[in-house]
Amino acid sequence: MKKNQSFLCCQFGFKKMNTVVLVTGANSGIGLGLCERLLSLDTEGLQLCLACRNLRRAEGARSALLTSHPTAHVALLQMDTSSISSVISAAQEVKRRYDRLDYLYLNAGIMPNPQFDVKAFFRGLFSRNVITMFSTGEGILTQQDGVTPDGLQEVFVTNLFGHFLLVRELEPILCHAGRTSQLIWTSSSNSHLSAFSLEDIQHKKGTQPYSSSKYGSDLLSLALNTHYNKQGLYSSVICPGFVMTSLTYNILPSFPAFLWTLLMPVFWLIRMFTNTFTLTPHNGAEALFWLFKQKPESLDPYAKYHSLTSGMGNSYTQARKMDIDLETSESLYEKLLQLESEVRKKLKDEQKESHHDPLNPAGSF
Image 1 (spheres, rainbow, N blue to C red):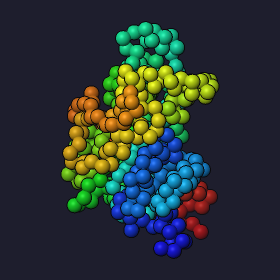
Image 2 (cartoon, rainbow, N blue to C red; image 1 turned 180 degrees about the vertical axis):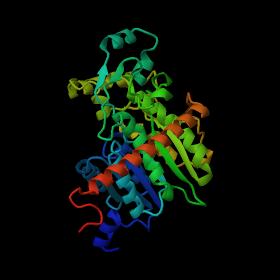
Image 3 (cartoon, helix red, strand yellow; image 1 turned 90 degrees about the horizontal axis):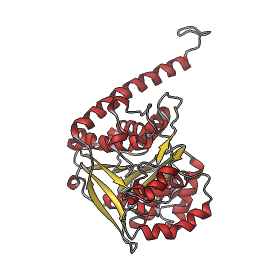
Image 4 (tube, rainbow, N blue to C red; image 1 turned 90 degrees about the vertical axis):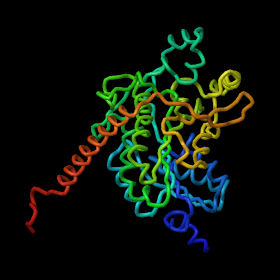
């Protein structure tokens, strides 16, 4: 293949690839760690697409991946899961580029304005729940949510609804007779039933929108299996464990970076007592990578696949039952379908208004 043809293939020509993978939130952290691991496994038969909100950062991630894997096929896609129009536009672009999609990693997520309860933290240090507190942030983390220009709660749409809409848009290339495709959600151990309510799926009234959105993704994954397995589409959920990423650092924004470095020996010590301290994006991506190699039909739709790391630093994946039920998952699915209908109608109406010129009514020239 000629050099310019190779570049075009990397950017736009995808028909020759054996496996097509799209990763949202791929420019850093666990998403980038996953991409690195996937390319270490296969650079010839893999078409990898990084779907990111910030293209400048995405280009940096792509350059880093190509530095370590010069023959890899890595494409970029601009997409902001907090924006309905961005998701729909990006999905249309994906369908123009690809005629199939084998893996869709729903990894993008935010935890805006985290509030750290110092008093609760020190109380937890001297309780029997200290390991759980460190592993999940339970009882010590709240967030201040925002509202997007679409009128939706920012955490809900970024972490959950934007991805749901993306799946719905990509049905034609995800569902094909005679082959399987996988949806893989990056959830969290901070996913708690106590933070979620069917009467408030956007979590407008609470202070734990992140936890609510992650519990919602657990429920939605089950519902998607119910509705799509017969079409060859399977959904799974993972937990990356406690990983040192920008999201983690933002929990204490005023905490100097070097202090996080000084804390690493403490975290390694804690890992002798709990296997959830994966710490690095490479280790955190373990379950995401493990699922890439599994037959989706063999996976448990009620399980969350956890990235774990032993005290000696060995990474592995373990399935743990989620605290979810089919009835609640179906109710959430129906509510999301209804919301999808509403936002599509609103977007259509806005597009009509933007194209209507009152000084030049339709039919007048």
